Image (cartoon, rainbow, N blue to C red):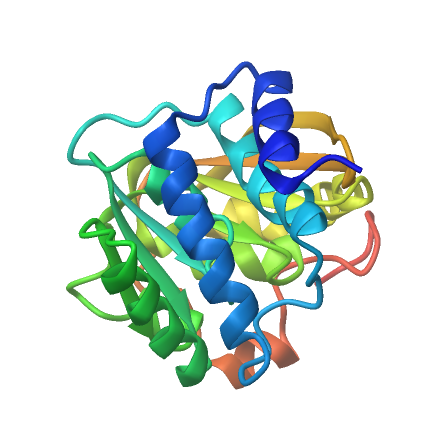
Length: 247
């Protein structure tokens, strides 16, 4: 069986990317911390290093097939959990500021440890519920990009994410192959929050399977009433149970 470093390099190469020796060193430190702390904090169900490399590290790097940041850009990874995709992308892009958001405090404490230990001075862990962030003046309209992997139905994710984006910014939702159905269901959320789907990118990651990256652009600022309170979002979600029904 290949070692995890070979899987990382081969997976990156499949995406047209190269992982430097310095970046590999940081991935090594991150992997060690992730697996060590996972015994105390539920960070990942995947504990084999080769599988972590394929299903977490290379999966995170798929974002780079459609995301081309500029120095000084600000990105937020909502529902980041143990730091995927945020930490791998922050390792590769020290010129970008990464806010890593999660609602579980223990996970944010872990991310603080990672940012200090590697070190990653461009990483800023943030403990908060996603629906609260867009109502904060200091976060609203602040980010060039929002990343989210397996966080929520796309209709909910749009309401979480678009208030955080600058006009022209992008939400990249990382989904499995069934995610395309959520795009059709999310038309009400797109209309309400001034978003439009700009790309669907299908990929296959060796050792991880099929992936779908959904790219949504903020074509105008989101109306001030969004995001709504969590209870209201749950009772009246801005997506259809199936295309052609009312939300």
